[in-house]
Image 1 (cartoon, helix red, strand yellow):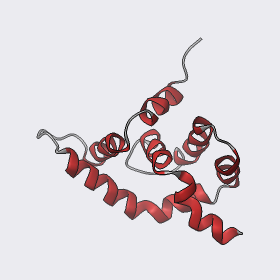
Image 2: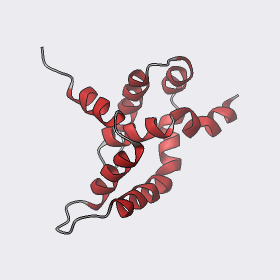
Image 3: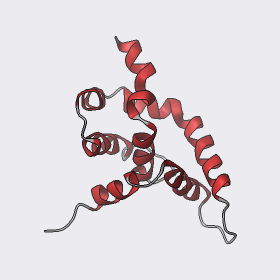
Image 4: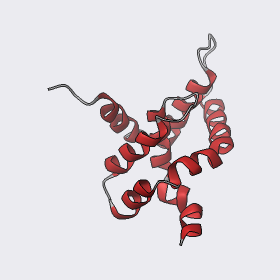
Length: 121
């Protein structure tokens, strides 16, 4: 039986510190570079991009009834991550949706979506 590669990659990213995932996202945004990249610059680039995309990401992820149900009732981090990944793979974004999913989960999906979910109540 073959391993589910996206799930395996997602699990590996979820096991990393948030700063490492931010560095990976920064590298994806910068692309190939001959010069070595300074981690703090990669993190800053990733945070700027994430902040600029926040509204689009909230609309895509937080408006999903499935995400809201899973995130507020299920404590299985992988179930929440996989449901989020299902949504992010459909977006046109310049980064790997697995990396972005891991980052959103690490930052806390419930807190990321809290503003939207409070509006719905």
